Length: 261
Image 1 (cartoon, rainbow, N blue to C red):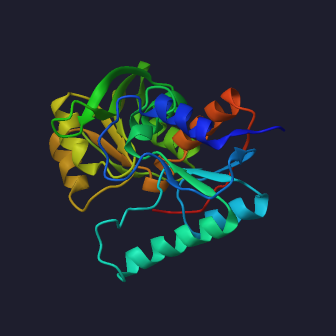
Image 2: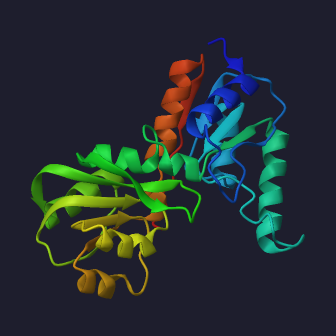
């Protein structure tokens, strides 16, 4: 495999995932330069951490593509635990000659390879609205609303979520035993349950729940399924890696992690 210039891969991928520059609190695209200009092997993981960096290095990757990158603690003072861990990760990447590519909120929102679009597709939903869960007044939204061709039982939806995400979803029943419309926000979107209720959907899927989620589901009538933050954000990065491999002469491999949260 001949490979492709890494700078060109990053430019094209960023233009595809985030053409309008969605506001985010972490940098989109290349976060760490590993020093190797030609990309032949692209390691893929949901998050950048010591384990996934080691897996990428053992495989001989020149770059690691993730949803959760570094700079989550960018505002922390030097020497704080979070900052120290992230600096150590960046040092490890550079020492191994691995560049880090990260796409956070833009990869949740993308209409083709985004986490929420992928979830809807895997569940058999037709996306009807892409303006769910807006980011303040930015005009960008990361979630979707979809509909089944025919209503399904809530238990059947929970079972299908288990198959798609590989987890046992935490189910907070609403008022409906049958589900036709579903709102989806990958990751930590529990508070969007109230928007889901306002939009009149039957069920809401996100990665994480909150202490008040069961009561809110019961009182709004919207069933809530928490499938795990990590589990809800594995599909997008794999779909994006497939896009990269299709458009460039690059081999990719997804490194899965067990993470119950």
